[in-house]
Image (tube, rainbow, N blue to C red):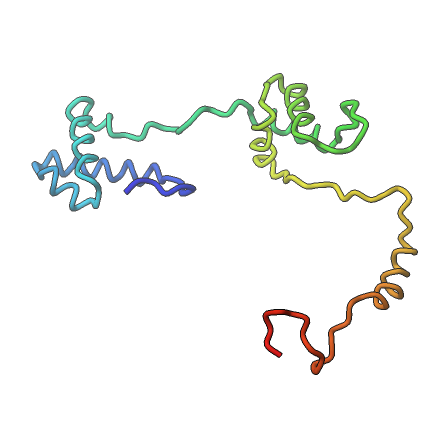
Length: 175
């Protein structure tokens, strides 16, 4: 059984299953039969029965949110996004490239919350920002000269396909 990696659990469905198990157990159905009817492991039913005896039906209700609560609120996320849109130059950086260290500093500057550089991507993903590499182009680049080269010179030097009757240079191909 278990939860496959990457598959989100449906907490409402899990709670409904536990409540159904509780109803069956209260009617006197055996733990093994409850497990069979619900398609769960018997040890899960044993655990639910103990919890039912200890805390009643309230003990089988869902626990609520799983995991740590987020450190940033909606307003703080909006402030971070506004800062990202202004660009790193607005914070005094010499280039327009966002790095994880720069984003971390932006987050701390805007919200006062410190994040490790390795976790900054989680916030960027939440804001629908993707990691992209800037295209590196030389300042001296001459687009017209490149276009001429591609149009005239490249076809001259490009390797042509050999005629079908020419022998193969491959040592594995039979002639």
